[in-house]
Image 1 (tube, rainbow, N blue to C red):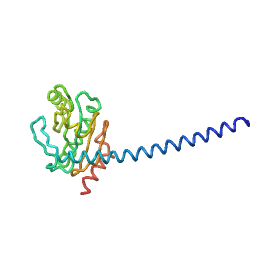
Image 2 (cartoon, rainbow, N blue to C red):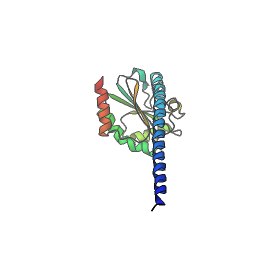
Image 3 (cartoon, rainbow, N blue to C red):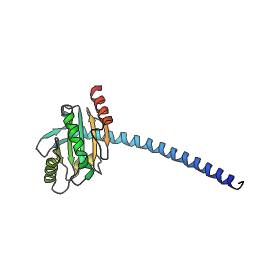
Image 4 (tube, one colour):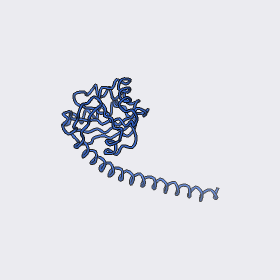
Length: 184
């Protein structure tokens, strides 16, 4: 039994050390992420103010002149399964907030983008317009390197960024949107 005590003490000390190291790394990583997010949000907001888009339906949109208090830029591609999976909730979200929120799809298909967008719009009954970004000009401005990504702006300021599949009808998310819309 006496032989086990030093081993147990070593295991306890080592576990304490590992726990402390993990907490320290997590804290530092979060601080770095916050600074990086602030920097990206600043870039997003600058690009938002300068962005002029032409949709596949030939609608010209200057984001800084939009009257909707909230704009959602949804970056997607026809080959992206998670993008397609989130469309039903995004369609419901746009319908729920049609007078307060404008959703704009930014499609990253490189081959046959107009054809692919038309197929997806029909199949998923999209109730928002999309922009073909075959050369990734818009995606590069917003540092998008994966799909789906949704950036939500309220009066030109970034309030939400999601870099994975998202349920736009999640009650907590809807509560956040409602609070933001009624705050000002």
